[in-house]
Image (cartoon, rainbow, N blue to C red):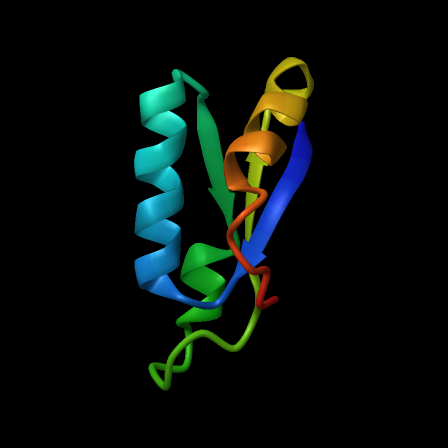
Length: 69
């Protein structure tokens, strides 16, 4: 698995999931629940990871999105 993006923005995360689904890339989101554990919003960057074989394609797909984590 390779990390391809970090974000604290739930809207951006939803968009990333949409983009990856359109490309047929299986995406895994790590730390999503931990990020919201205290109820004040994301405190820990949420990591988006994909299989190594899909990492380059995922990065190309996400290259225009700004990382904020």
